[in-house]
Length: 370
Image (cartoon, rainbow, N blue to C red; front, side, top):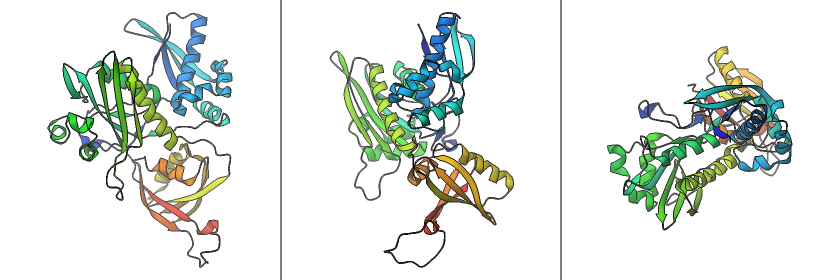
């Protein structure tokens, strides 16, 4: 029997003051997985490599549907051809097979299959969950050692969805109570969420109803639309499950699918190009860092320098998706700040005439670094 153990860390305990937190997270080790294995036999190793391959596909595409894609199914039969190394180790008396795959070839496979690619820059989600424990309702906090928290950890790891839990210290307790979460009082919860600097917050309840558990979950953006009277959920699900674990799995899966729709980018098949600019580029070292940053973004096929004027550098970009995909992805990254959009050339033209490529807006960024 094989059991998956995912070897990357996406739950964020409070090891430092809140001011050190940023509003996005890099998920690393996207090319590896480990499975519990009963022996070092060739047959079990082959089975373990296939299972590890499925986990890596899930982590890089973000969606369960990727595993049913015909090209992925075909490659699964020869998963070892994409493997770069494997090894065994023991943990608490249990034997594990750790497998690493060629990340570039994994991404190429997803592109060829027409599947979305979810890069390492991923939104951070703050979880406000009311659950029945110790004889009463309570909000699951960052320091909880409950089985429910462990299930969240496991689902977070398997889908590559970074999660954060509230401290529920005096500040939180003064602003948010159990009834705020159960009653979906979004303004109160949104206000309390600001200190954590997460991109999204999730309000959920899991409560026993007879022989089953009833769950409901709403996912909300960090900031309210200034034109809206109240916050509207981006994802809203409810249902019944046999166990709390099943409820948690359903909620994290729903959030993950939403994020994939927003931030995972499939190849459109079109030759989309654009320009962006970085200002205040102080030296060649910073320029190289920016070039490397652009090269690893899942929205970009290729990037090249178009011009350098003083401390402003313009880049020509070829895109897998569209410009909105690119800017939405870059807005997640705390290393990058937005200045404004600008018109490349202030040429006179009639509004009824098409806008030439040279007249389109350039999005301007600056590099903040770590």
